[in-house]
Image: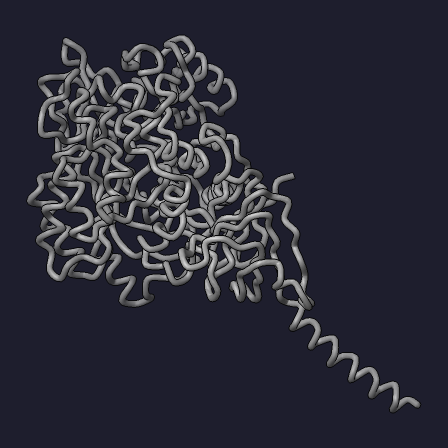
Length: 549
């Protein structure tokens, strides 16, 4: 009898193991599933197994299915959303520091800072900000506005575009900036009529202050990264591309943080990290030793700055600014020097991600790309905001990626005409024109410059309704695109931009099971209501990484 029981136990164990193997499959059932796959654009069921998608189709797939069934409560499932351009850790810091973005007057701006001072330790730096002088009439802030309330607290508050910052007198002193300090190459110390620094620093001029700012501890950095990943997942993001800004350690900071999280098993968000162009050989050596990473964390290339921003009047233009006739912007470094460095990086096999906003800057980068041998692999122009008529067609001809951020269009649209006049707006945020010429447009946020929110970006691309409500039919409405085009830019095109289109970006058999459940169907609703859509669930590798309460 004991032997019979033993045999029965063994058979039962084998049956349980077999059942467990079969039941490792999960069916995800949605009201509507937009797959991003042109050959099978719509589905009702996704079946996953061991991180991968193994079947996609209608509800007949559930007949005889023995695995777990997840009946999602959302109205639409889409592929995992990807953000093509973040300054990730700078954005995270903005979540935990003072915010002045919504300030609508000088008094409001100063009061927000004064309130923050009461919550921090003696001598602690005040950072964050994201101020926008257009919200209070256009007068740039001045260190004298804030000196009385900040006192011994050094202050550095970035403008909304991250190409200017306000610092107080304490921070200027620590950085050694005074009346006699010359403007650095690629930057400007804004001065009053007597030549005294006002506290506003542009582009490379900010670096002197960055150098004297204290470094956070490893534990603090890890905590901030966890906050940032959680914030991204909440907004339906399954991957971010982190692009270094003007901060000295940007790029490597994210590289080291995500690498540690990956090693420790705490990484919950896919990441692609770019590092500064100046470190091209260092990155090439890492790739030679360790490769370019994997689907969770990769480091394919380098980023460089060509010019500044339109908001700071430092975007490089062919003709002067309409509201500043003596100024046409400027290249951040000599173009010949930039071209030489880009050529070296290309010869090292690195992907290129080059910031260009003004029409002259974009043409200069396209000229450089056209000369590279061998031709660069999917070279990116970050922002591609204001394009000459010729530039629109050249993107496609050169195989260049237009790495764009649609939220900027509905923000800048409030004031861009004042900067460059109506005639030059024809090539501004030219989503439709670029798409129609065959260019792969990709979308993101430029967080912390804009919200880390792809739903807001889709709304912006589809409606182009400016934040001030002055353009209900859309700002430059001929450049509006469809919901499907916008989703494509946030999914498969972003995957393609980093060479991962065979792994992520669409809901297809064999790809990783990354998708997002939304509470509304973006395809059958009024475009102006898109912005109210909520993320109910974010899934990566078949695992629920975020679920709304």
